[in-house]
Length: 153
Image 1 (cartoon, rainbow, N blue to C red):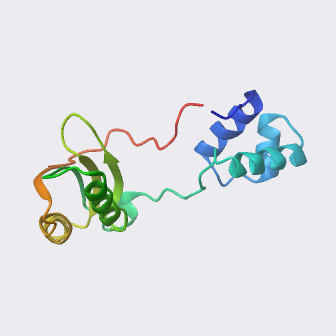
Image 2 (cartoon, rainbow, N blue to C red; image 1 turned 180 degrees about the horizontal axis):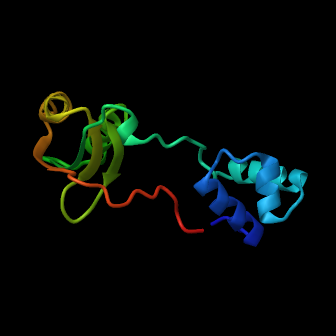
């Protein structure tokens, strides 16, 4: 665990809300000088607290019409087979999130595709084509009530 003080926490909370703030704007909002703010942000990046800074694009801006939540159970769960399957998933553009889970399926995925035909093609190419896949359960989102890619700090 990395030791964070209140200023670090304020910086992180503000950056999670809007990473496009200039260093000057961020410094003013956390009540420190611009050089101090820049030094702290750099330290947070170097320590791995800030993994990356990205823009979150609205799903309505592009033809992403279908969000699928997918449970995948493998036939055999050796460390090597789990890793091999996981590596296949992380290189798929449609797979937005991939979690190894316990007490149930082996993986839970969040998949964004254009439509049901695209999901079917994805499922066949990525899931059905894998010899070690025993079971796939797919759930399709009808409404997203919350999307908060920030963590409480």
